[in-house]
Length: 345
Ligand code: F6P
Image 1 (tube, rainbow, N blue to C red):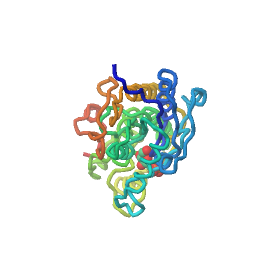
Image 2: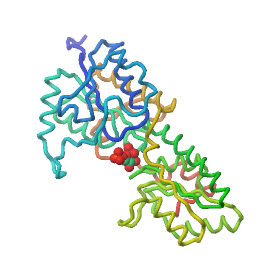
Image 3: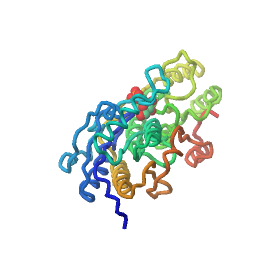
Image 4: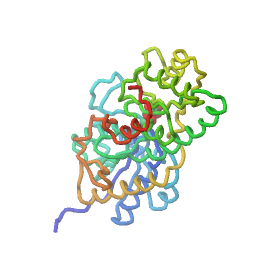
């Protein structure tokens, strides 16, 4: 038996854009650490800023009760990138402070809940000598090294409901309805909710669309007496640099090139808000509890992940700096194409 003392005190932080399920993950880590292992748990406030400024709250079993279903994050979040100064240049003055504060607080491990940017910073902190474990979250579902992130299922539900609701106005007014969804680099949300909501055209950042193909497709539907069409657009598709919104741009272009009456809806932050779906609560709880077990095993420098339905982990070194994009041979994409959905190609 190892004579090493079991890890006794851990810190949890949540960084990057919020999403449904973060509190369920905090609860999963915290309750397992407290109930199963008798650890002390603190929550650092506002992402990495909490460790820079040594701002934290103590998390107890009772303070973790009742947060499972809450949206957002009880710890607050920020997009602070501690390894960069305000000119975007590499700077290690803040990381040095973070290492000092980690030691002063007597932490045995730092759990970083976040998306790609957070996992990259988590990796850099582990290179500075901290014991770090990452937990992937984002509605974008684009974290490398995991098949799914929590937040995604809730966002797909919200976006699908929005698309469902557009069908009635589209049908009543015989219009083209364009809906812009989140997803700067990856089109997972547009692909999944587009297919679930019966989108006729789905445009994602990974596929360079051809306007003429969209035009021919929509005019053909109109000639075939299909009274309306739904166009689902990820915010990150390629548009001219002077344009501000992918949805607005595509809607305008469709109207110009087809002459069909077109309207646009930009769904925005509603996609990230509110209570997590049951699937996200379950995934976040599993990820959180697994992270606590990894701490006890001193399985540091890794991110919890799900692969082929199993909960596992991947080295942060493999995850850092990468984005998981929709590939051309993605099964859902291929099947949707076979059913006649237009991806602008
Ligand atoms: O959390 C990821 C994401 O939802 C992206 O899809 C979106 O572009 C981005 O966050 C915008 O968030 P914010 O305005 O908070 O930076």
